[in-house]
Image (cartoon, rainbow, N blue to C red):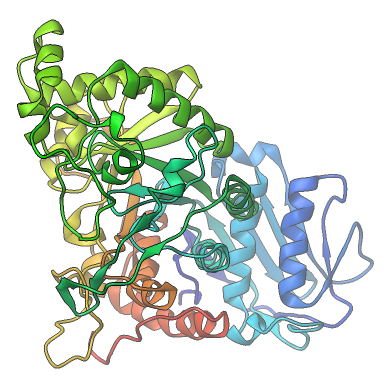
Length: 517
């Protein structure tokens, strides 16, 4: 027997004893002096319609941090014990306690998601013992407001759904050819010009423009609000500042950042999807610009990592630019691929000066991979093997399993909304093992985790985003958390039904799998 929890816990034992029954007087008990723990208690109490207290005379839900447990449970593991006398969640850190509360939510009927005083009164928690910790430390989801903007409220709702699944990284793709979405105070044109495109491709007819201007951006205050909201749910927001390619929006705002010495140079914020040629010039002016931008970015985002993209940097302009060719000769580089590597290493030094680490898509290895960079693998598993062999860490996000902007069922006759293309079934996601085969002893630690991506070209709004993400992101959450030996497709499908009912009550859109899927 397994609990109706996604992701599935590491170990669970039903004791067969009497369950714990919640009443209107059941408190959530924790140390009032421990601010992070008190916030976790307040979230749980608010959801269940209960009160927070420092002590209790009778049955209670008790949350405790016991630092010694970090040795056995790590920084995100927990122990949950339920019996008639109460529920106790213990962990080495507040994060672990928080993940224990997410499991407790799923042990209760979905109706507890109806907020209000006494929402959980009269309900029961089965008597059991859970010991749980994640398989991977990076369990991520990527949002792409650069193509299709999401409001602060919509982003927060997505973070709520991530938290339920014990996902802990929101990769925020804020910048691309089609829009610059973050306020940079030193360069106001980035949002004054770069955040707005003349039109977008028509939904359902991607070769035709809709004639409607489109844009939006997050002020730094709004970005900090989202970062704080995520942190309260133990989610780290990793910003992406795309470079050296996918730079049309930035260069449209400040043309001096581009390769002005190439024929036909006339940058605009792109109104079309696809890969574009506008790439930052390898000039000192550009590195000064990027240093200024990154200084403001790291002041907003406390994450260890800053994502720099590095993907799909078309070399056409560098091939034709006299300045780029001069830099190649002066630096003793072989070609434009090595120029990109040189460019990214320069940026990595800027990031390192702020005490942060660089992560980028797997193209950052073209021309030579920095020994201290982390690679996000999307194209081919061989790049994971390449990076790991050179001592680099990787995050697995292969197109074959993790691109949740692909169709999730054959669209022929299925009345599915338009998607990028491809086909990734729910079971395809679930069957992923992010660990590349053939690793040597100790190399497993270089695989930081797994991430699902929702590229926004064919995701027109938040409802469609949620429809494309869930329940495939539910499956990926189990891939990232649960032990490989515990995974069971039929069991997951049975546990999925109450989770979908819970998401529905939370106001999250999703695609309900058909029988047999």
